[in-house]
Length: 317
Figure 1 (spheres, rainbow, N blue to C red):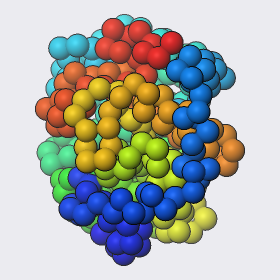
Figure 2: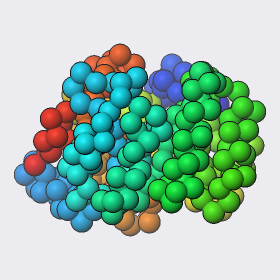
Figure 3: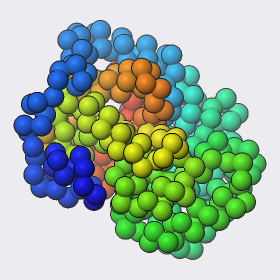
Figure 4: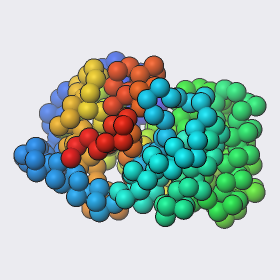
């Protein structure tokens, strides 16, 4: 990781692997910068405000069609994709998808039919043969006019799935045949500092910002996310910076100073979108639905990031 915010204010983080928590940093923050106003509202007032924000339509939602008992590797029907997407369609202008195989390749077309814009994710990983299928399908989807943004890979540098040169090759191949489509790559905000060639290759920087996974206490999470965004802006050199994922779980084991709870999840959502509206920030919230399969990768909190539960019921009405 490059020097800067993490070096000055180190935290325990899955991404930074920094074992130190600087509580004095949080204590020194000005309350207004931390979005404290929402904490003064009653539970009923906060729920009403969250619903109003959704009814006015947020910029975007991370969309996954999987229901209880399903996970990547299983084929999903068009009917299920449509049914799940219809639940969230009244509340968002964009959706973000994560794969172009196993039925997910139908999501962008269905989104278009429902009047939604799309950030189409091309799933890239360690399986190079599967990467070729994902890329070919993503290019086909974009060429058909169903992708407003094509995202080549998600956190593959963070995970170490492929090399930087391989990622750049995938991006270049897509850009060569899709000159009129915005093409980017999704990763944790600081990875673009560490990989300036990737930042240069992208038409837009698509950044994942998770104060939760950096052990940030909920009351200071907004100012923390603002700094994440600023760092990405500094290496974007005028290109658009889009927050492709951010969110807060409502159930699960605390991660350092970050505590999952219904109140914290509601507060985080409201703060994020008040900031987005004030400063014109495009945010794709993570996530649309709770997904039980994610506990294997993230622990018990992995199942509880959705604004809707796994049955499609809005959680915070």
